[in-house]
Length: 273
Image (tube, rainbow, N blue to C red; front, side, top):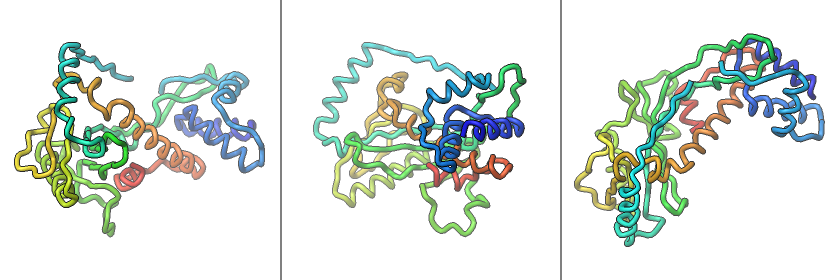
């Protein structure tokens, strides 16, 4: 199994394909299954494999986020929130937030043999915005709203039903119009269910105060505190991204086997999301 993994790794790097640790582990497990080897491809195995074959981890840039924490504001919000939401059950308290997704982006680091220059292919920066919404109890997830740059895509041809809600504008961003339309659709849904729902969102220009809602009461998080107060930022959106990247890795494995470039359409992205 190890020799098969090593040969595969050499071939992948010859194609300038970035190979991350999880990708290598996934391929090793696949080889082990095919060859009938009874061993678990763990991170410990990966570290020993890298050491045995003189492989290291290299970058093929990131940004740091500053957080404006205001302790007084946080304390005030905590007590205010309890009062505001006292009349709602956890099943009827929802939180929504958007995240950017570079849906074709491959890892920017790769395993490589020591002493070998590190090269990778071009990384796509094509972006989607994904609106994620779920309730406090964790029992109900709203259908994802995905926003892209183009409405009528070739990959949507002959597709009658999309796997998620989809809208488009030139920058693939959430706008106040899209947010309002999305919220009104949810309001009609909850009204039909005869429910009274609290919707907690962050305070930004794309989230206006929407009037005339029948079933939803809108609550806004304090400005500049969303990294601490936004429930979706406490690991939910991160999990979505992790599972999405895993799907990309599995597709990348297939592309490497076929010696083709990785192709991911917007429709593929919606399905994986």
